[in-house]
Image (tube, rainbow, N blue to C red; front, side, top):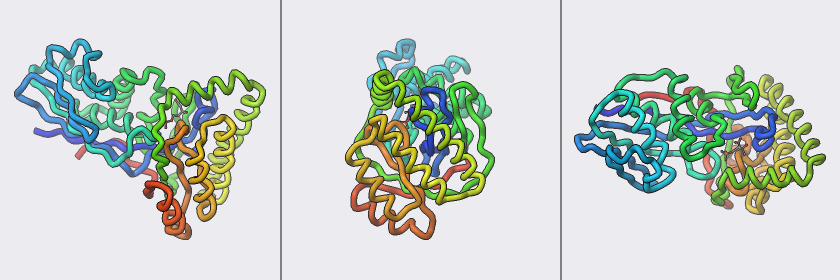
Amino acid sequence: MKSIASAPGKIILFGEHFVVYGIKAILCSIDKRITATSQFLDEKIIRVRSSLGDSVMDLNSLNNLENVPQKFMKPFFYIAQKAIEENSTKQGIEIVLESEIPTGVGLGSSSAACVAATASVNGLFVRLTKDEIVKKAIEAERTIFEQNSGADSSVSTFGGLMLYDLKNGFQNISSRNDLNFIIANSAQVHDTQDVVRQVRNFKEKNEDIFRKLCEQEVEIVNNATIALKKNDLNQLGSLMLKNYELLKQIGISTEKIDLLVREAKKTSYGAKITGAGGGGCIISLVDNSNMKNTLDSLRKLSDCFLAKIDYKGLLYS
Ligand code: PMV
């Protein structure tokens, strides 16, 4: 018996970094997924297979997850170990991960993998609710990223557009915008925790400037919420460019990112960094009138692809 589940990646439309200091951010899941396929094994092992490599652990050595050979694999062994414990089985489990989401560039691949793997592994025993899955997936991801806010896992599980802030958690944005983005990958891999630390340094050295930037971000996010309700692409694009300027000021852009945004700006509604920056991806808002031109020019500079908002979230197949 195979248990198969898939979960989408995400982009941050507005508010990255400032969200760490209590400002609201707007996120959405995208129509690029990770699929996890789990099955029982006769051997007493957990095996995780993905395009990034394969890893195996003996059921007896699972008590110490520090022994997991590749750190990024830890959440999947944790998910399997928990399911084995909770369901008192003596069988081994194999998890195969297949991804349409580039890794390490801020598109939520790690959270999507945790959500898909949680649903798929537990689905060998019982189908959990989305609320149960998101809780377990966040717990698993915290084995490698302790400070993880849970934002990515939530948007991946439930799908759609969301407002998120530290105090109030999530609010679903009810408008079902059919937005089209071009995601261009700078191919500069970033470490989110390093970039967050770098921004903290900037803030500590420039408290007044940072406070003003936060005020501007609040206004951008408020206006973006209204623009989403009206589906006003011109306004959304210009707010993305404003948000990009703020992100530049806190020092998380790179020459490659600047080049991509400059190019995207010529033909699209607007563009900005999505996620931590220091490399990673930019998003550019387009529709049928400017999609081809923008794609053609960005393709000359980077790997890029089209993405739409995903409203399905976690799916079983
Ligand atoms: O690299 P990403 O897409 O996971 O972006 C992280 C977003 C930050 O605001 C920079 C950090 C955070 O925990 O919210």
